Image (cartoon, rainbow, N blue to C red; front, side, top):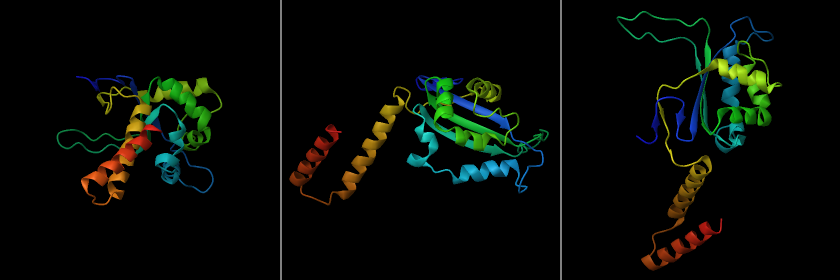
Length: 196
């Protein structure tokens, strides 16, 4: 079935998922816990076009989640507990994930440093090989992945989303018109799209 895969790859996309233990030692400074520092930093990052992750050319999607503990699955299972909270990064990358991670180190090393300096054994962002090794040790395989646009690359998807937004804007700006005037406005709209 096209677009579905068991594992990390769906067509040209790679699903990179990592679980990184967050430090549990007593933090220096104001006493704010390491997981709180991560949560507060992530919360203040801009979303959408202003997101620093948007500067990474082959990164389609990136999400961070903090796991404080495991939920009880109910009877008859036993309750498992984590020894520390974990930071999960879930991302969709067009192409090779190592190239994407290198781009992150080049474009947003300060962002990675602010997030991962709160995690156990983080080597910093100065050495690419050490950082890639760190991610590799924290990486886990996806058990089921779904690619929303399996035959399209990142730039085609972004172009389609822009087109959709432009068409929506055209439709909302166009008042109820007689068919002839509407058709003329639509043709003009299509001409402006072709010039971009």
